[in-house]
Image 1 (cartoon, rainbow, N blue to C red):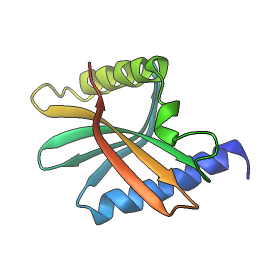
Image 2: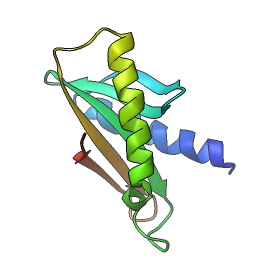
Image 3: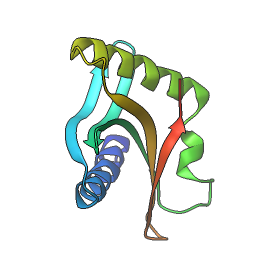
Amino acid sequence: MYKENKGYFYEKIAKKYLKDNGYLILEENFKNRFGEIDIIASKNGILSFIEVKGRKNKEFGLPREAVTLSKQRKIISAAKYYLMLKKIDDIQCQFDVIEIILLDKTITLIENAFWI
């Protein structure tokens, strides 16, 4: 499985999880010169910028550990650009991480995983 396919595979799982839990998917793989956001979704009037991380097992640590400070800064910058582009300034936003561990069959949504 190529790296791009792995990312797509985990994002597909994450999107199903989000939809099953009442989220409306607004954007997928939103890219700009500042960075990329895997999924932008909303639920209960909150706009969530979601990073998806997955691994087959925990042998090399938890997937959430791959969301480094540098990665967080890129996501935040990309989110600010998204808000400006869409002229959104009156909605509560948060940065979440969806962690998928295949062999454990676990999906964990970590809300407010980081913030500005």
